[in-house]
Length: 498
Image (cartoon, rainbow, N blue to C red; front, side, top):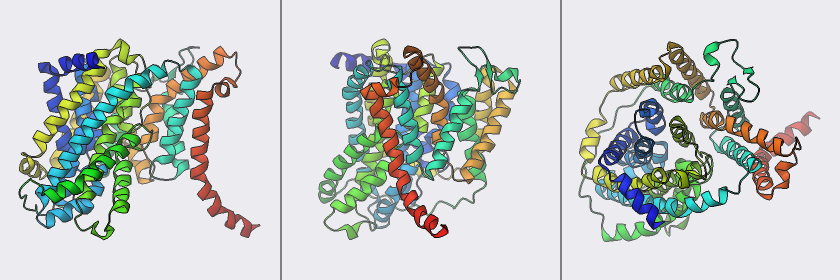
């Protein structure tokens, strides 16, 4: 581990990679403050532009955007009651109330300190547990991988916002889109409708930019944005001794919750921040303080969402199974550079894995430096009109899609997916299962085929392995637990009709 970390810091501290880390965390902080943009849209837009970078540089920059957005979202949540990131919604509850009482500086400092501690511990957990998980994953065969992917898709589908059936339908639709093109085994065309341009399938970047960037532009322009409220006065950034003492345990508890949620598919930073807030309220001696400026309501959730953002890289890098739509984009970025995520990444690409881990520590230090002294600058940047912001995103998106293969059809396909994304969002479907199905669908098909080839067509191979059977059992149990309340609610109506 020490040798790996030394290699990682050598890679991360090179001038080029240090610059890309700074660009990533700075951009992440900025877009984390802007509602409607977020790391998902930004990474989707910048994905085509990473072609010219080395795999290490592109992952360092994209990762910086991802965990940097968690920092940025807290600043506006506290100062103007406007969460830029969904995981910062909880921070508004007590953070803004602290700001109204003249304790904005203390709230911002605790959010930064909690985020820094959680980020460092989360990064340490990657360095410690990811190699172990990668070594264990070497024992996985095609049946185990197929079952793991199935569980990840089911977990994401049933844990996202909205109905379980809607999540499963979106995952299946994503798998279907991922299978468009030529069958690698038989050479047969699938779902191309005679279009030669679809022979090689629909490019992941085209779908990602369309579903997230284009659909967000349409959705945001259709909403009436409220103006940013008058900025509160930012006082001293030093919390009192009492506030520091009240924050220690929430930071540690929030970090533990975030680390646990980060490695589970479909949960992510938003759920971990809500879980942390609920836990802190239950642990508090006086729960009535929450909602009126309790500093524990800032320290816990901010630590949780940052720890979750860091540890979500563990299953993505070591198992090749992303736990969220953003992690699916990161997985796509690796595949663009010809790298197949999985247990061999650590041994075959040590400079990529350890360089990314080391860059996260450096990025956390840079984020503290950026977020505290530059608060007033970030608040000024909040006043950028949406009418200026979204045309720039649209131009960058179209340019990025067109440069993939210099084919205008790609831009039209991306626009089509943008309209589709907007429609499904209006119907309260989640895009996360779709993008995960798109990325994991071909991998699922490949592993199922390999497993059945090994077993000469016997599907019992998926139940003979204890690991595979465990993953499938977990998927079935998760679906049963979430469908049970719906069945109970429907039972009286069925009895009345009978």
